[in-house]
Image (cartoon, rainbow, N blue to C red; front, side, top):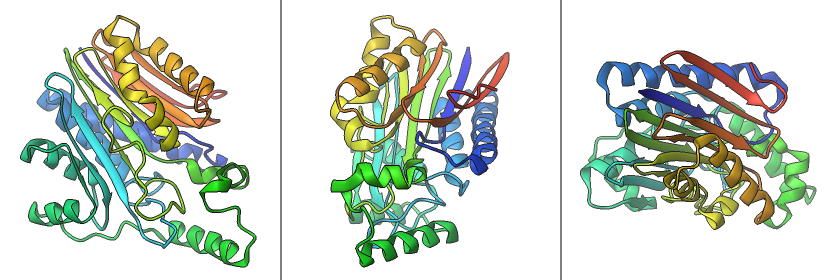
Length: 309
């Protein structure tokens, strides 16, 4: 029994980018599923799927990551193997192409779980990761536009006026990519992000925090997206896997944990899930969230609550 599901970030995707978002998540799912069928390795399948999303500049991860308040890119990523609870994560890494690969190196080559900032970058260079600039012209243009508003006093930035920022620029919160893979009874989950546009330098969201943005055990796996500060406070992915541990199906779990978000922290969030029985789930409280999943007999692509095809 083989399953894969990917997401391209919850938020409000501009209509003109919907088709590219759907194409991107489906391509990532197909890439991961191909490796899953060929190798039977869910870690490799998850890594390849997330790399496909990181390499697609439409998504806020890897190439195309959003810029910080001071005009840099600080990326986070994590990956976890459910059968052994092995995990690896990186936070605040710059100038590499695929943070998910670095997170995997942490899991497989060290005794640690999370490396951050300068230490993570030293580790990356020692592992042979070459210098790479992930900033696209589109992201730089948007950053310059917001910076001009900020300096003129017309901006709603920074964080203490986040709700007003969301109302004026909802597309800025479309971000984070993730994947969950099932191979027979082994589950792997991975997540990658550039964070939130105009975030304060050094800010770390949910993505590299095991249990918040990513979690997997023998009963299920989950990858989250949205406002990290809320996801962290409810430990969203671990909460989802705990529900699957007691027999709740992946679909009901996804809906249940988003209900928890809505009734507590009340911030934007989305999640994808797979349980060990092969059930697939996803849910979000935002207008859109591109999702694609593949199993042996079906491909499915989804982007909004209104459009299901």
